[in-house]
Image (tube, rainbow, N blue to C red; front, side, top):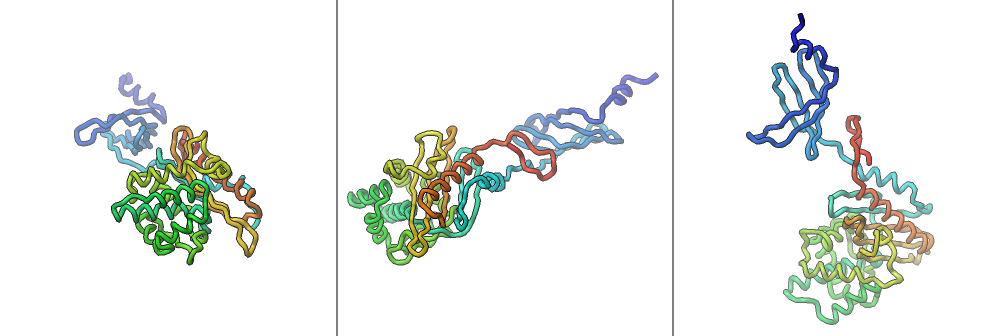
Length: 327
């Protein structure tokens, strides 16, 4: 007669759900649930998943189990963003680059590369440099500097921007500040041509991180001051990355510049937007636009695409090895 133990072994299906309590350093760290495949000789090997980690579990003859961590599938958000911007209308001859970061989750995505004219988005960088210099001198901004800063950021005034550009030491002062701020691919414009400063979307995201993130070279007071000005943009200039916000919670600075030689437009926008309670940093740069309106539409569409990708949560993992999680 067949024993009850033998009957149980005979009835074991090819796949079985097993659970183990993982012991590390004498303490139970949690239960690992696995879908295990039975093999001849009484062993089973499978992949495991927990809310916080994954493991490979081997069950040897005699009931001994070993657990080894394995890399969890990752979401390729750059690829998702590249797919998302395929539906964004980019004119022939125009270029666009976008970078975004969700400050809550740390998720980020980027599309496009290369350098772009800053146009007036450099005014955020100019003010950041001025604030760093004031910090180093152990002083606050003067009443005149505050007046100039408010006009430069709020209404994108060029005269006050030129005055503060000279005050920081023009390109040399900007470049010195950017070394401390972590901008590695930004070069100040020649002479008084601050709008022709060259930058990348990645560098502009770094600059936004210095204003809205943690671990900044700027003091808390300087960051709050600059962020506050970016929340008080003139009504006619409230376009760009703010299109990706789900309400009025945004802070931004836009830049627009028609190039004399070609008649084509540089259209840029950088800032912070709030979406579903998540604070997201977004930088969109473009050039070669035939009109300002088309450039604005391009920038806003790219910002919406980027924010949708970085705030999207993965809902399942692909069973294929190396496949990204889908969402």
